[in-house]
Length: 285
Length: 251
Image (cartoon, rainbow over all chains, first blue to last red; front, side, top):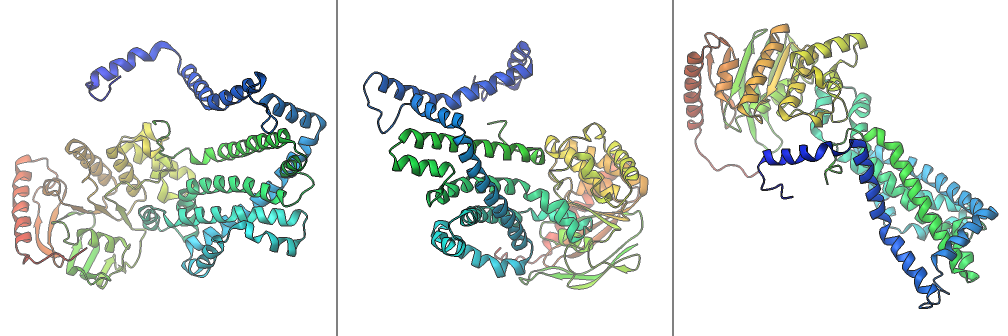
């Protein structure tokens, strides 16, 4: 429909003619369902294609096993209880590393964002440290902290810290001066200004930073578990490589995808009530 | 009583925005400040509001020197500047956080009623039109019950119909507590329609060019307002013509 050229009257007529067909909730349900179908269309098509290629003998599937075998392996791992054990180990590491890294990132970001002295003192060093690839610390962490859980959690925390720090301090730096002036006109004290204007203003940026940090947390948990671990999804990857079990590697990758998406979804869900006020274009586009 | 004595402001880059401005305002008086752009109108308002620091001179409210935001002074900005994370009612009550909740509720409800936005109390700012948002901003300033209310071209972004509607809302609110109002505007008709007295400013550096008292302010006398508007326009042209043209400083 070419809305651009139609006079406004025609547009509104068209809308009112279409509206009464179905209840709004039903339409919204259909739209969400349609979006879901579109989202999974490509992976499902690829998986089916590969399955058919192997079933029909076009491909061997020794190095890239068919989806049915991968799912079978995943199911077997789940039934034996191994999967739960590995998932638990990985999630615990991510949770500890993310919690400590994100907390430190928020605190230091708030410090450098609000106090010029803190910014001039800390930011240059932190920016220099950020330029070091986090994995470069691994040998040092192992020397200092041994090979058990501590160096893994610390590595994840370091990986999570930097994006959260950058995001939070950037969000504070870009708070609209005009809104701060509203606080000044009403003579807010510094703590009140921070709580009533700065904090809500930086929430959207902070949530984005936390999501980036969580993604990196999963990245670094794999790195940490590849270094050497006796349990965890990363261990399943190494084990699969050493014993030539590509189906186990793919099963672990699937588990990672599911966990990462689930964790991100939970984070979005938990922070949504705080961001309801945002004037976003999402509903329109 | 607000008195401004020999006020000057020079910015860090050497620009002299105001030089030797003296003005005093009686309680309940509405004074409009008009002038071309760059004549220091907004600077004057920001100094009185305590948002910027005075270079030389004195601003006093009932004898107390103003050197920072003051509880007796309210300011309405050119844009609404509502806090997007607060509902309309919460925005109106923003300056009342230290008051008891019951009092806050009744005052917010009354102010919303005066600006005709009672039905929108629970909405987000983004859901309101520009004119409605500016009404909320005016209500927010009034609800804190200031002795002096400063308005910095608050209607300049609105269309003519909305602007007249807002003039009415402003006068309704003003009639309740009768604060002193300083209205900065570049619209001479608006100045003639609202003010008791109009101060015409001239630039380079900003100072008072002329002052006109309005005989029957807000009388609804269209012919009288038209005469005042004409006189103001002539004064404004004159104020701009007195400036010896020189190359504008690079921004």
